[in-house]
Amino acid sequence: MFVIVFRYGAPLETIDALKDAHYANPDGVFARGLARLAGPLEPRTGGLVVAEGERAEIEAAVASDPFVTSGAATAEILRFHPTWPPERAATDAVRHQGPASATVAVGEQGPASATVAVGEQGPAASPWRSDAGSGRRRPDGQG
Image (cartoon, rainbow, N blue to C red; front, side, top):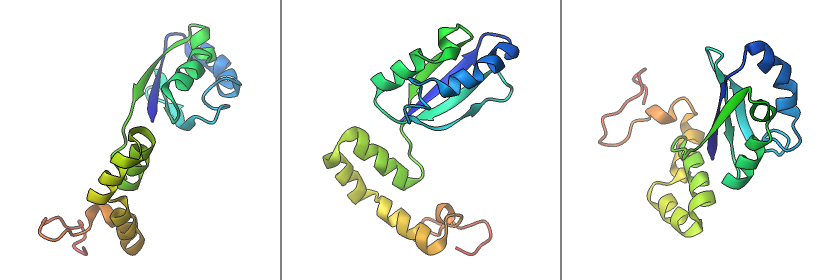
C-alpha cells in the first residue's frame, strides 16, 4: 500500500482547471483502479491518495498525472504498512511478505480473532473490548 502526497505549486485556479484531467487520466491511479481513497488536504495545499499496487505501476501512474506533467504539483510516493484494523494488516502482510510469513503472523496475532470480536461485539466495541488481564475497558464501562 502507498500514500501519494501531491503538493500544489500553482495557484488553485490552475489546480481546479486540471482536476478533471487528473481524475480522468487513462494512465493514472484512478483509471487503473489503484486508488482506494483520495481527496484534497486542508488547508488546500495539496492532496492525498491511498493506493494499492506495485511500486512501479504507482510511479508510472503518478508520472503521467496532469498535476505533475504540467508542473502544477509535485508528488511524493510513500510506502505504507497498515497495522489497523488487524484484518487489514494481515491482508497487507499476505500481499507484501508472502504467504509463509503471513501465516505465522496470522497464527500469532490473528485477524480472525479481531474479526470474531468485531462480529460479536460490533465495530465500535472491538478497539475498546476488555482483554483479560489488560485492564483496558470501554469508556462506557460496558466491556
